[in-house]
Length: 238
Length: 238
Image (cartoon, rainbow over all chains, first blue to last red; front, top):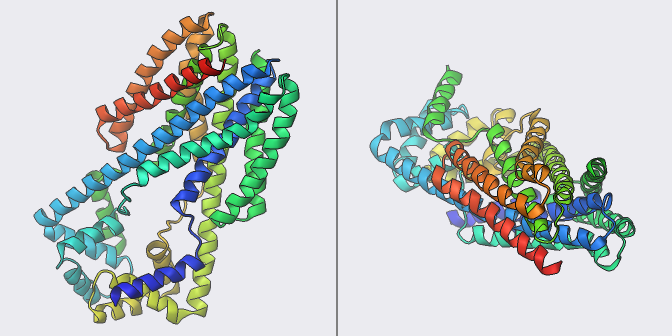
């Protein structure tokens, strides 16, 4: 019964307050950078290199580097979060066993922040600390703000981010693959990628609950600014 | 008095459980990628280009692109978080006013997860919902898991991430600036950057509470893997 009530309450909230799923968040992370950085690098190089195939080589090297840095880096970061969670969990268990008085005081402090009457605080502390499992759970969630990480999350997340980066990165490079002259390919790449960034930003806004049009403009702006500045820096030093 | 108790309790925890400050987290985010991606791009290009100055141009374009994508992208993401918080806050205020019965039930659901006796739940719901400000605050924190974003955070964060990316990116490019032949510069860049990644990973581990040596190896591994794969992909398509 308890269980059902919670599920219902959560279901209700999923409609009311939008929260992006982990999958969508990972796609957004990978594709935002994948569309932006290889695009800007290619634009930058076009400012000082005539041969489009050199731009493609640099672009592909960048996509490889970026997707591995983000994918493998993300994988290791998620694993570190998991280890962090487990070490804090161990510590809380130890504290609950060795310093129960102080831990009980900490539960009370958290509840007192809500200005509950002292009587209610005491009764709540009593029932929370009766079950060590629940007690530790309470401390992890409300004292440390840590949620239990999902198991296969680390691997899936890294794959999704890496692949999204690669897919995003291929789009701005494609014109350089079929047009020989870098400066000519640049024009096509700018048009194609700005449209892609705009559409991606719009969809991202839809999925993450922000205003789609604003998200579209902002995403195109970041890509455009990065490409523009990369272009001028490359021109400057070449 | 209440205030003092909370502060003391929080102070105690800052010693016990390590939590990285926002500044350090931003430096780590920017420098991880800054040391890795320009390094790997330069290594990749060295596999198919003899002239080191071309590697420098591509590397600088990448640093410009990456630092803007991360910095400006991070700035806009933080602003979006802030707007998300404010829109959810508005919605909670509305719900507390228009559907107080349902919102009171939601507070009760959260408290029931801790298996508090129904009597305690009722008394806690009563005192939380007496003050709308506290009530909304409770829903934001414990129902939606949203913390109030700091004001100047968005701007500072973007600057720190962008600058850290630039500083990190200059290190692997430096050998290409002083050595004319790309393949020769590559050897120096690999040695210098792997040492830098190792040291950075070690310090990062110290600051973020994970095992320093493990963090050092992992950071060097991500950079090395990215550079190695970028090198072979560039060789393959050139």
